[in-house]
Each structure stands twice: as structure tokens, then as C-alpha cells.
Image (tube, rainbow, N blue to C red; front, side, top):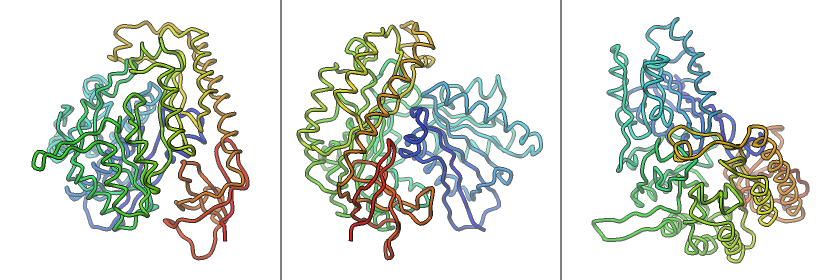
Length: 479
């Protein structure tokens, strides 16, 4: 039989659909060979870290002799991998779980479980109040799936939401779900120590811990040997990566890790996400500039353009400091693409402070941004100590102003690409036509261009940019 895994994606940080699709993709499935009596169906919501986690879960399930299906109705086990970062993301998951009630009534042996951030935060409501699931599995408990599935199959509730100070899943080989065979995610660290007041991640994913650099390099090398041409190194804050090898005494920083991965093969493109402005170092920037195969693109979330709001957010930098960091990036890499995250209507934000965000956007000219209105998340420092006192009308109006300005900047940024020749990694067919390829530039801009005989997915080519919109470039392969 043919084994398949389905992932359905939702990015709560992106309100503009096209930008969301360019960053993450809306749906994809992976295939493998094998015979199995039991089938699993996995649905994933949220960030790239959640996709990476689903690949780990799939690996554990495969060892348990599960096959995978894209047909929910055929599954013996359904897992929903969840996101808690935004209220809207949680609402979608709640609706999805309630829709599965009927399936459980019709198939009493069907097991339904929740993975990830919501599992850790809402275990009581999921199991006892709503009684929607048979298992809740936190992001550090995936090794425990054999026991949890066994308990749930025996009529008990399977629960493990304990957070770990050590778990990195370093030696678990992920089951790759992205069928293009070109790009892959590689998680280098887990958790976060930053404690931004609006963010639930430290409470759902625990403290920072970095993975052994050798296991990361080995995973990336294996990907190259299997034909992959691009890796994205993932972490809540990749710049905080640090690993001490107790046997050799060697210390490895994020800059050092970037270099080690870049040296695996000159044709391996290296990307990373996400950077924290206060932690990205000049060493990282100079390493990026040194190696042609490290992409010249940085996602650098600013969140607000006002220093008082940044202090309330506990971001660890001021407006001026952030602008100086942007200046340094462009001094070292003049052609570097830069994107951001922006929150509107954080606690006590005034109209003039909102205007500071708009003026910072004008000063930086981000290539694109992921923008959203503030929504209070339970148990965060902001929820405990601050009043969510900006009206919904104001939040949405300010959000719209940010989106409109970003659309202008994105359009202008893409217009500046016309006439340039860019190296593009072919990732797939265009969504609109099988006669066209699409792929990204070094600066993470999506380009659509007519196919040329002899080229296929995973090949590099030089493309001259001929047209642009606010979201996409069009071009022609240079002879």
C-alpha cells in the first residue's frame, strides 16, 4: 500500500493570504512505502516548528508500525498538532476537534489526540470539560507516544505534557513530509528564555536548549545525500543557539553552526528562522556575508516602533537600537532581504505610538511583514500584569494601516528587482500553470518563470526579473 501523510497549515501571524502562502505553503503531503494494519492521519496548524515536530511524530509512529493516510475516514488514529500563539489559531483547532465528535461516534475505536502547544496549556479542558480527545501530548513528550497510544487504546486517557530542560529529539530521523524533495526544516534548538510579555511560547515549549551541533550537521549531510538542496535551521530564537561539547570542550555558537552547515556542500542553500533583534550578532552577519550559499535574508521581528511599548513587551531593545541593527545589516550585506513581525494595539499603545511603528516601517522598508492585532493570551506576563485597554476597533484600524503601508513597501521592493538577474532554486511548478516553475531568490522572494528543457526541481538557474507585484516576481531564464 502507499503510505501518505497530510498536513493542513495555518499561519496565525500572516493576515495577508498571499504573503502567508509564500512563506509557508497552504497544504502538502508526503509519501513512503510500507505495509501496516493501522493508519494515522496528522493535521498541523501553526509555525514551521510545528511542521518540524509533526515530522518527528511521524517518525515515532512509523517505528510503531503505523502507516499514514490522506483520508481522514480511513484513519485509526488522528492527531491534531496545535498552535497557541493566537486566539484565532486556537479557535480553528477547537472547531476542528468538535467536528471530529461525529466521527468518533460512528467509529468507537478511533483515537483522537492533540499534540503541541494547546495540549500543554489546555489539557484539563480538552480531556475533562470538553471530552474531545483520548490523548494530550506536549511538545517534549513525543517519545512517550507508544505508551500513550497504548493507554488510549485500552480505554484510559493518555496524558504527558511535562516540559523538559534536555529534550531535543537529536537522534530521531524525521519523516520528511514535503514532497518537493528540495527543501527541509532542521530544528536546532527548542524552547525560549526571552519571556516577551505577549508570548505564550516559554510556557508551552519550555526553556531554551540547543541540540548537539554534530547531530545537526549529520542530518543536513543526510539531506544532501538524499538530493535536498536547501535547509532552514529552526528555533524560537536561533541566535541564542549555543552548544558545549563536554568531551572535546568545544563551544559552538550560531555563527559557528551556520559555517559548519554551509561547508557541507557549496550547492546546499542555508536559511534560518527566527532571529531575535537583541541577539543576532555581527559574527552571524559576517558569516552570512562570507558564504555564498548562506541566503542573504533575515526575518527580524520588531513588534513595535515605539521604545516604551518595546519595554512593556520586554523585547530587550529600543527603537533606535533596532534601527542601528538594520543599518549594520545593510552595511555588511547591502543586498540582504529583511522581513518582520508587527503587533498593533498592544496594552496602552497610543495613537502617537502607533505612528512610531509606521515611521519605523518607512525608515526600514521591510520586504514584507507578518502583521496582527494584539490578542491577550492566558497566563502570559501581559495578561497577568497589564490591561488590554486598546479597543478592538482601534486595533483593527491600526492593523489595516500597517498592512496598507507594508503592501506599498512590498510592491516597491519587488519593483526594484526588475532588470536584475537572480539565482533561483527551482522548488516546484507554479500554482497557476504547469508550464511555469517557481522558486525563491537568495533574498526569499518568490519568482515564477517559464520552464526550460533540461531543468527540474532542485536545479539552480539564473533568472532575469521582468515583472512584479506586491507578492511575486516574474522572470525569464537567462541563456
